[in-house]
Image (cartoon, rainbow over all chains, first blue to last red; front, side, top):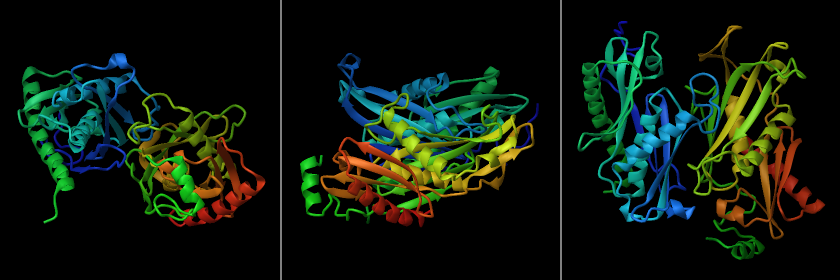
Length: 234
Length: 255
């Protein structure tokens, strides 16, 4: 049951190397790329635009719509069948919830804002990378936000609590618990939490602390990327 | 919004909205290989001006079709995902993405770019199935040429995953996929009496007809598709083919 050394040599509380860029899709109002390890997520924001059919319109605020898609060639192993799956639909739901918690949609009543996420290459942690990219894309688009959202998974691999599981850890033979979490870095509040596997209360507490710490570092990368686009020449 | 009458007026003077010549591709044209090297057997990103398309190749081992027991197969699929344009909707593939994937598919298949017999592992039992999946990331016109180029670039980048006769090990790759031919496509658009290539999205909306022509390195035509509702004369077709044969040579330098 013991997992003494991580497959890629990281410390147990260490994130994979990250990379972020804002403004990568010219057609979009806002867009971003977020890479963590070998997982690469792209997000683009379109809208606000008039929502049809009209009965879906909300009088007091705008509607946020999210799409999440793994490109057919982006999986580990055989081709991912294109088209929506129960998994991708659920990820769209939890992504929307996580992003809505920081957005003030009262500025665009009756409108729709579309956040579209695509995964080009994956090595686990795709929903978290997608949320990181989407949150940057929304900031790039200029929406009023309470905070950024940073997301990462923590969990149990063998007997160790680890941060930012890659695919080899998620599929660890003797068992792994994956807990994707999203935080609002400023308040430390949680905007996404899911868990698969079996874990004790104490271990869960430790994993949440670890993810929270990780999200602070992720947020720095997100902020830096946003600043990079909007810096003015001296 | 650029109107049709304005585009036509410019065309009559020999001009285009962005100042390009009629048969001039946008700059830059870029190809980046291995953009999904961890996941895909081959991958590439193609940029033509503001149009950006990624393509990836996956290889599965499957049973052959009963009527072609010693041949592998090719599946080309394009999806117009909403990340690339406000005009693309989430949902099942529409006719535009189906046409796009079929045009790219025919160029590759009919040129003989792949020797399907070489994709056979065990006759009647196991063959390689090649999936080429194409995704525009930023759709700003001329997705046909960009997608055909991206598909060929991804195939050029592709390596077989390790197969021991039982299971495929996608973490290890061996030999490069052999390409017998390298077909590329150039689409020539007709607006009024003029022919243009590589329109931006706005320009493309104002064109009357188009002809996509896939051409091998020997200059042979291997697939064509007329689009749009305007009719074309024999002379039109001849002129369009002349343009495409020349322009494909230019695209080929980037591959």
